[in-house]
Image 1 (cartoon, rainbow, N blue to C red):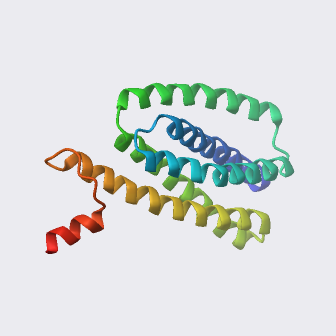
Image 2: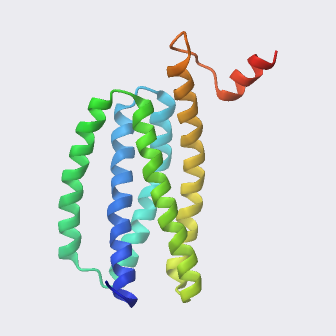
Image 3: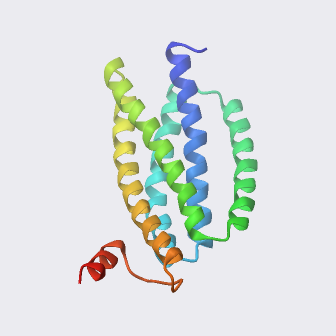
Length: 176
């Protein structure tokens, strides 16, 4: 197992690949989602996620990441993204797509939280800064995507098959 800077470099490279999959998913879902709200959320968060990716790429370069390794990961990532796209097409539902996005968002949250805490404890201010900023944005994104997930769940589960109410509206209607 790598140690020291080699370990940090490996984890940043892993995060780049993982976060890159999230970005590709947002790009795909901004185009293919049936829900206008889902498309808008993907479009809204895409520039923020791309900025995080850029910060990670810059940091990886400073750590001495090898471009050949990045090319291999990019190629693998491209193949995986195409495979994920095919699976998405089979899912046929915004609900299942957004659930998969939430899983990737949470995975990124955990990674960035680790970067923030470890960066602070190691005195690595750049790692800590990247971790804190990205974790905060992923926290926000996760809350908003979870709200939409609940709304889509309700729409699918409602006996009429198409309730267009938010969870708060549904709760109010039950209380009256």
